[in-house]
Image (tube, rainbow, N blue to C red; front, top):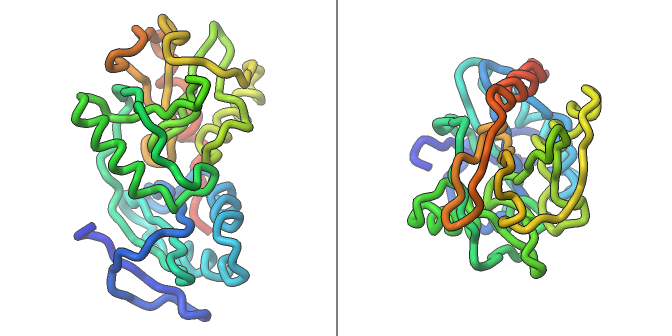
Length: 248
């Protein structure tokens, strides 16, 4: 966070503010590449629903106007103890592959709202890294895949794209939702179905989030053996990248 810069909303504009460790009540982030972003309206919708603040819409307008138009950035809008603020951050390194690890616990306390569990999920990713993985997969009480610590988990069943059921307790993913709409528009079947990790043996598994877009799961620590159709991931990554639009 050394490179972060915080701008706090005062009711009429944004002003520089000191960083603090106040608990997050709501948050949302997206990747900005040379002033272009994908799914900004969906990120806005998700943050407004989570924040529940009458001032949040005006704050978002100001936050978006303050975003840099050159370079790679990963800003985050935050609601913390009644204060709305923009955290300007450089974009971390991005990749196209990921190693998965099944978490033995679900640490989330507010699974359907982005923000309150960010710290807990960061600790979960630290546990995944200690196990040799990049991302932790969270399971429901029935053992079915619910979500990743920082990304949605999706997979292929033949030529059909499969996602966990919509009523699974998780934050809805802007990237996964965008992918689902795009797939439907291209005539690809999109299925919602529960699956335990072992059921994905021999399947192609992806993760989806705002920072990395789509990543191919190349291995699963103590989990199923995964496969991939050559060229499929890169084709869909290009399709998603083509949806980036200039900031307003």
